[in-house]
Image (cartoon, rainbow over all chains, first blue to last red; front, side, top):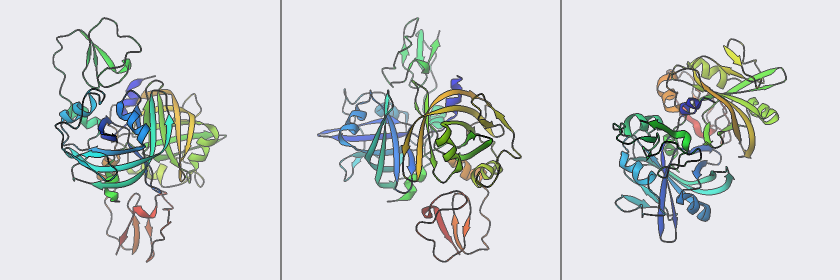
Length: 200
Length: 200
């Protein structure tokens, strides 16, 4: 298997938000896809280690904020590289709460969708939520950020490594050790050992 | 519902091919997504009106040819705007048959995946096939074509309309009539009435 083939798949980037009790939370994903037009239905696949995953599973409701090319790396760090289990991700963020009770984020976003889960597909490490779109609107005319655009233009260039070990090619986390365990999961962005490369 | 929001979702473009008996066939789709890494698993959602849909449903095997920015409009017309029910789509095409018996296409493609269906999700107008990736490799270094790139750079600019009626914004098919039926499906690319706009 030549893993470079998977880098040829194109994706957008999204903040998926959920609300439960007093808690707002969200995470970054690249897996929002319109599945059907009649009815308007999207899917999103979320890692089971994400707190947002559990909130959507329990509440059945989420919003999608579509990230544009104006999104800053801080937005990816904020929503992607820390867990709602540890922090309140609404702090320091401009957001807007919609009628479904769930927030969307305002900066670096060009469109929003509100979704109600119809069906879940258990994929082992992840759950795919298939959801009816209950509302949708554009907020800006900026082009959407693709995953390729993020890697080329948003993610900072890697600094000369002072540490030895293994670096996560998705978020830059460094594992300091000679041997990276095969079942290692990046504590920052939840990607597996196959997304790490050796640094000397 | 503001449908412009859906245009903000980013996609790649793919030829999905299948093989059954003596028949090779394929269609264009924008819905190939890697769902999990452990195991390597993708999904593709295909309109039930496509002959390729029925072949995959019966055989459980398909290949994905990832279209690059070098793909020509003729490739989209060839695989997207005619049906394998009417024509043999292998005529006039450079292709290569892999061990799973299914072809992939060579020109304007940068990567290939072979897939074996694990699970089907019935989405009404479409079926989502969730499949294990049994092989994958890159064929070219060219960037992948996104749907946005296709609309901007590959699809020919619309000609001044001589006909009156409704034009399909996806493929350019023209419905000549005063009123477009609400349940109209484009006979060329299978998109619904909501993807048509009025031409005068």
